[in-house]
Image (cartoon, rainbow, N blue to C red; front, side, top):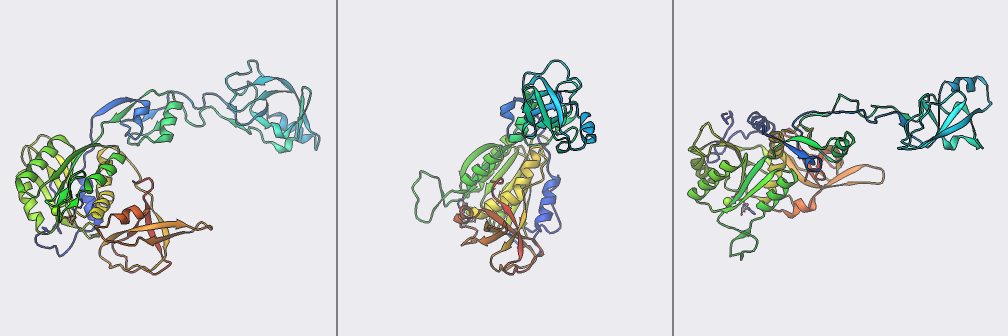
Amino acid sequence: MTISHDTSGHAASPAPNPLPVDAARAIIRRAIEPVEMVERVALRAALDRVLAADVVSPIDVPAHDNAAMDGYAFDGAVLAQGLANGRAPLTLVVAGEARAGHPFERGCRAGECIRIMTGAPMPAGCDTVVPQEFVARTGQNVAFDAEQIARGANCRRAGEDLARGRAALAAGRIVRAADLGLLASLGVAEVAVRRRLRVAFFSTGDELRSVGETLDTGCVYDSNRYTLYSMLTRLNVEVLDLGVVRDKPDAIEAALRSAAASADVVLTSGGVSVGDADFTARMTATFGDVAFWQLAMRPGRPLAFGRLWPAGRGASERSALFFGLPGNPVAVMVTFYQIVREALVAMSGAITAGPLQFAAASSAPIKKRPGRTEFLRGVATRDAAGKWTVTLTRSQGSGVLSSMSEANCFIVLEHDQADVVAGAPVDVIPFEGLM
Ligand code: AMP
Ligand code: MG
């Protein structure tokens, strides 16, 4: 893989044409190879894992025709007679009872019906259930209006949910709550999933102090390792926190090499701005193929992307994908969600539709220059009539992490979009489900 593109600007010489977000995503997509190793895990351990193969249903679900309501099962052919009788109610004799787990063993004969409870197997000879609310019962007789019920009503068919021999879940699916239940409904006790992606990360900066240390003058606490830890953990990848690395060539090189030796993906934050890139580029020249991008996006303009070979550039052995994220805390989160996340999901072997996005009315005008994608922080609310409106958070500074806490969505202003007038629709990506 060669990480290059026409507009690749070296950060030290500001790029005249910053790379559009979609172009960056396309380059990254081409570099992706999903993890191959497969392991078998017990059903519960499959939650949030990626299916390595289709799960073919070994049974019909439901396994047999069964009642969808409490009522009386009968042969729906008699409905035609009932209708022919005009207004006269149809009368049947209750011949027995079927409950969930307790089928009625013999078939149902002409003129008979069977008292049946939801989930009970349909007795032989029955295809319709009349709900109990529709009947008048006198002793062993039930009478009801044939017009109120259609043949086949209130009967769930065998295999209606999942047919035996068909793929119930496809390879590449991330197993969520419904899927876990679905697998259980098939009697599946073990699932083949891809091994979890290993992602190593560290922060760079002489000014960074870790939680628990004293904050010296001019220093800041390292928050990026905590947002990265959280975002990665939510993606259910294996996380390797390599701590803080000082802005020293030897230290950064050693950290990058050791990260690449033990992980599939290496993420760093900081040290990719103009000036820093030269410095890091020198580090990666011997063991990486790294492009320093000026992205046409805000926040998150500087980004490094490429591949690292711990044993030397282009070595055939293992390599790791590398994302050098900006240092500013909001830019880290935005680049993670807008650029890195999709890559990690694909490397995990997952096939997804991506995050939900919908339109909301902007509560105020928003200034926007065409030629870059902006990811603003917004608070979306729904009024009583169901209409969504979105308002910008108080600050949009790329260092103001409280704006991410305050927000509940990204507002996406596309590359070519210009100023937004108040009330105009804008795209929002909700944090719920994403974070
Ligand atoms: P840099 O890209 O390294 O120049 O960093 C840009 C800004 O982000 C600076 O103000 C840094 O202090 C800040 N920053 C960098 N890394 C971190 C971090 N891990 N946690 C909090 N702030 C950071
Ligand atoms: Mg720095």
